[in-house]
Image (tube, rainbow, N blue to C red; front, top):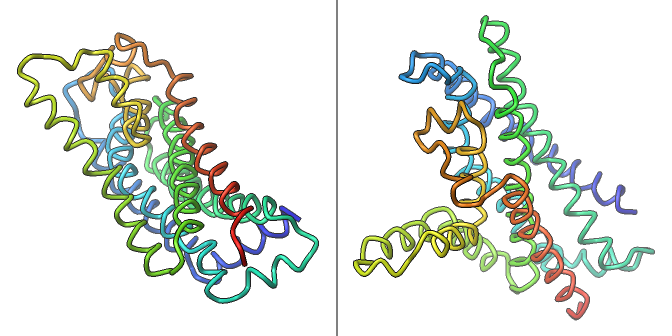
Length: 272
């Protein structure tokens, strides 16, 4: 039943042209930034793909959460408003299967968009004669982008089960995007500027950075591979702060699991 529900979401994504639009957007950006990244840089260790990873991860932290939230903000509240949720639950399907089936379908949509868009850019770069040096960092960026999208799909579901109207869910999704993508970092760095007594030490700052899934994504992509971190000018920062790839991946996985668990808990107790 999970696969049936996932297929339905995938078909809806194809019918609404979500997949095609996302592939074109991500692919165009990846190709453009790859071509720009082939310009000479000041680091002899930075390959074309390393420079592309820096540019794409910086843009993806804005685009991927937005795409994910637009996919998911009305996944539940929209069904309630249209009256189709009650009809869906008349079938031999449990409520947790509804959530996980929809979630799987939306993650699959994002998977197709990211790997067709970003992966297609690599193929075009190869056709143009670019080197594949730095492919590990590029591939890690693709997988972490999917994980970032899964986080915001899960957060979108949480919003969708808590509100009563689609309009409220849409506004809340935009607000959530602003908080995690823009406002959190502004507040954090503003606090650092005002911290004349230097009460915010490195350990506390690291913890505050890890609280935000978008910051975990940035750190993962910009500091864990030598060529990328050298080109970005932040070599060694993650290791000095004790932020390993396992820790960063674990934090992002928690950001997927916790909102989904809360969504399931609320949905199980919501009246139709």
